[in-house]
Length: 188
Image (cartoon, rainbow, N blue to C red; front, top):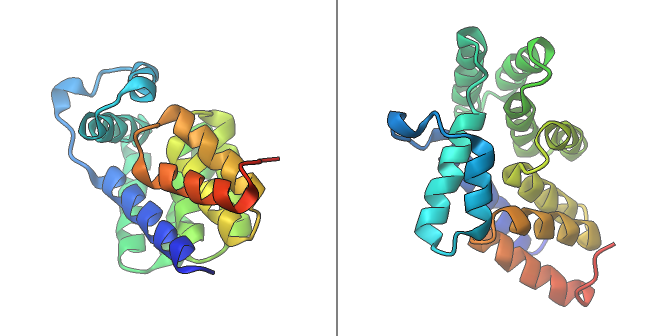
């Protein structure tokens, strides 16, 4: 694995954790994530794009069930402490009880990723994208994993799709530029 791949992996994990824990003003929580995603796709200001992305993730993070949200909180806490087995157990309970809740699958994919269980992470990412096709974090995560697995064409395709949704994300743009150079700009 090259230094740039390791750095990108670390940046994606850090970005996902920042988004997952970013505070958002309560008066904007009623906004529709689809409207915010539409705005995100055309936002040119990086700061405003980051704010919009954080708001989207904030909305995706609420299941509508206090019990499931508590399980999600416990899973995030366990993962932050490095207790991945507990985090996976909590997130599996979330996906079992609310299979339509994309963020449960996404958080479990992130945890599998941190455990370097890339096949399991990709399987969960696939479920996220079935439920929420514009989940830029899942697409970026897929790109990182596919890059680590030395599948640069597939990684490039995933990153390009993420950039269509969140074009201001610098890490995604950097990954695309690097992979375009490696692959001659082609994705399969």
